[in-house]
Amino acid sequence: MTALKALYGGTFDPVHYGHLKPVEILANLIGLSKVIIMPNNVPPHRPQPEATSAQRTEMLKLAIADKPLFELDERELRRDTRSYTSETLREWRQEQGPTQPLAFIIGQDSLITFPSWHDYESILGNAHLLVCRRPGYPMAMKDEAHQQWLDRHLTNSADDLHRTPAGKIYIAETPWFNISATLIRERLQQGESCDEMLPQAVLRYIQEKGLYQ
Ligand code: ATP
Image (cartoon, rainbow, N blue to C red; front, side, top):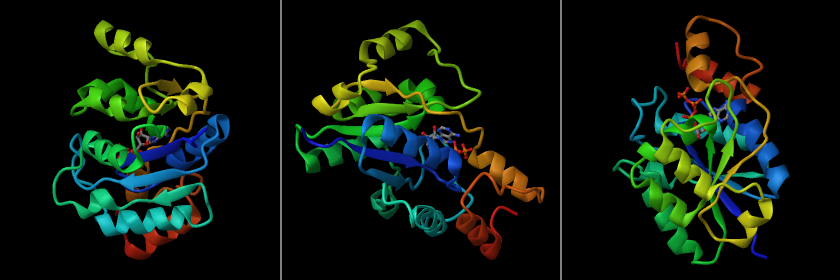
């Protein structure tokens, strides 16, 4: 059996435990040996990040320095165009060949909005979707057609993810972490503590550079 490889995209402005902890647990649950973190350049659905690409990368490096599960891929940051997940996954699929099982990791909030993503059907054509639970977001899709789409692709078998190259959606029973980058930025701006929310090394970097003030 070929090992399942997973990509984890996001803005990571800044990276926090709500990103890292569910994914570490997910990796144990389904047998993932590598998770490739890919920070995005100009995220199509979002306002621009506050930290620069170089600063977001530096914070990710500090966060994963002692975690061999994670690897960093800076390809989206090197582009000057918008980074669409569908294009990145198409490129990754070409590199990995047609039979390699590939997955893209998202939080529950991203699953709800997923059908509004650019060329979303092709994402599942190239990878599975692995979903981590996140507090405050519904489990059901907003409309019936999207719910049917979800039901068609859902699996609760981790073996399925290893046996097929793409096309399944797996909702993992990961614990809830009530942390978001927005909350961290707001707390830092108000001078409130974020000690439990992100790695100490990242927090030190934020303080040294005077970010999110
Ligand atoms: P912001 O608050 O700025 O919107 P964020 O905390 O949601 O940021 P992103 O970098 O946008 O972080 O998220 C990258 C990925 O991580 C997304 O798929 C998102 O759903 C997921 N994610 C972020 N925080 C959590 C969390 N607390 N639990 C589960 N998944 C999360």
